[in-house]
Image: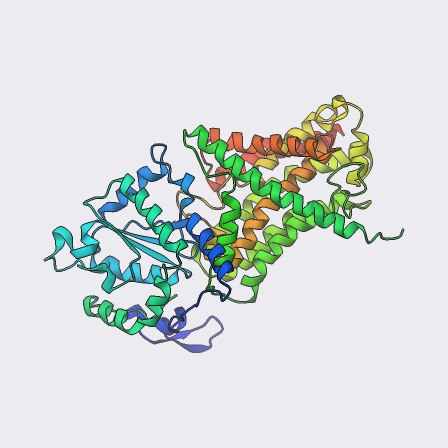
Length: 213
Length: 301
């Protein structure tokens, strides 16, 4: 564990001494909860329709596939007309695109960002790297199967998938959301221990609380 | 003076119209901006879906009481501004709760929501929020200065602090509008208008290039939806003030829609054409160009 994360005694400006435990003081350590759908089906259907037509992507380029997201915003592909837009903060986004290879170092940040997103949240894996490691299948510092660490709703195959493939991916994701099958956040909460064990297996310098929304 | 209770449902009707108009108008402006960049842009109904989706998000976290109150204050600013302004001149239905000294109250409400937002965003503890808040308050304060000077000039010109009276004085032809009788004050106020609309070149608050998003970084789910609703109301409410003070007000809804669209388009046009200012550039710009115009208008009045 890093020095700055260890418990320490801090002297305040008024001379009062108090103990700081960064990991517990700066983060929330409560496990995620399952948020069931609304009981009334017609309301949940309406909500799911709204969620599917308003996909806000977290602007976090994790691998080489991130470069394919840029043309999506520009005139040629213009994803905005499908209700897709990019948000610079995990709080406001509901889709996390893991764009290509995911190194262990990035996985740590991905987990933090994913846990900060509001449910229902979706994960899309781009390229063969997220499915089976791709060309990094025997690498010591990238992960091989994304769905062991985060619940994945949809994979877009290819190396790299072109923007058209991504647009098709959004289209399919919309169908999944409308059908009410995109419950990745609940899956994560239900199998929290399994996901955490997998994450901790690859991340050697684990200096986070178990859940840091 | 007796209070007519019927004014309350009428004011709510005004609010309903303005919310819908604001949602559609901001989508239309986004579409026009997209067309300037040769894109199709969002569908015209996208804002409604985004609003519904944010209400539909299941989980939310809070950072304290002030974090809750931030969006509420912001919305109060927007609705309050709208409620105390006669939206449609000469209409008993849409004069809302306007009264004799409402101009001062309107000026106050313009600032109130910014302060509320600053308190709420400050409690979220996110560094981007803190940076955005300090930049936002600096810029809004600077933009408020020429606006206040222009508003005082107009108040001196018409010898009244009642928005209804100011609109009344401008009736009877396009040349009676303040924009023609007192062009210096209107010029100062329109420069101030750019500063409060959070569009380029004055979007230092959300600073898309270096601290993406600023104050609302931590806002999500229903909090964000509340602020989106305010994003629809607040610019229109501000435009109503401008319309009433400088552009002869509106005597019917079609005139209102047209004038609001054109005034909004002014900010959007400047935003599409110009790149972004840094915070010190924007403040210096207001001090060098807008404030002297405001002082000049006050001297002329």
